[in-house]
Image (cartoon, rainbow, N blue to C red; front, side, top):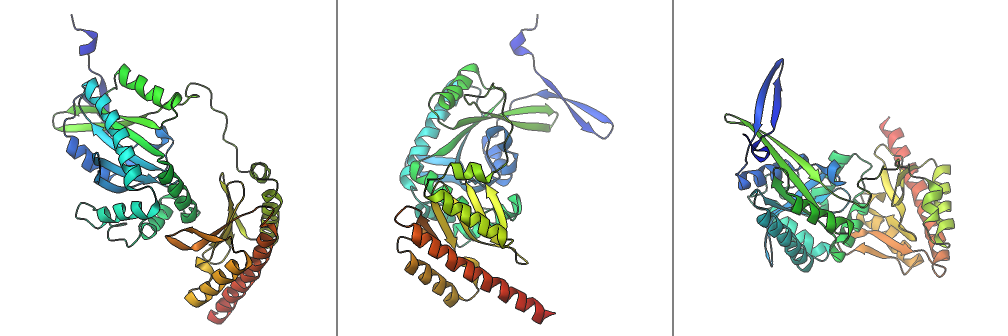
Length: 377
């Protein structure tokens, strides 16, 4: 009699009107799988894991405890550490989980901020191991990721929001940990993932690799394994971004300021890109440019990068802004073009003065663009 554990699943591979039967099989080529994931990170089931589009920023990345198999970032600024463990031995899978925790701690110590993380990433991008021509030889994190994520996510994707979230995740050591394993993960491994997610709040996910084979041909199917406290509950429908909902999450001082910012933008027919984390104001030129946005509960951000191709003109705007509101400071040392002001009772007048100045500059920007169009005509 054939035992239940010896039964292998079957799958169909369709080619036109023909169906080929494949049988579940082992997959032993761990290095080959790492290489395949590096070259094609889009096959990682991000929808199953509540992640966004991915870009590889490291392979065999060295940290104190060892080498991280794969290091990625997603479009929302999350850092993803991947460990592949193709053995069906449950002990080795649990060992992989311990390795992930060790690697997470090592990355937090090695790259707790954008500067250190960028150095780590650029070493990989400039190495022979990196084959992604979109990022290879990039001079900065922004240069490598901005065009790539805009291509993947659309022109509404904002680098400033991404960088802010990435910086926060690095500083807090908030990494997403993923173990890639072949076959159906055993009950102990699944229970460990469930405990980490639901009880500890640790984003520890699994990617189960199912392999079906016929002769030399293999069908490899990755499936995400993720648990949340509401994993088995019926999901509430996602609500669209709403101004009142955003303002309700702001401080009592900042909410009226952001309402004015939103209303001013609507009156001027600006493009208002709306995100869960805030609102973004873009000037509707031939290629819209972002000039400012509100983020979190009280942060007012201004981007001086798009105002002009002339560095002297950009410097004038930055100096004027910082003259109006001395608390305004660079969002990060790597981006001298984005300034942030916390809107409080003490800085409220400065915020309004800065907003008025920005609208004056926006009017000039639109006028210059209109004049160029007329001259071209």
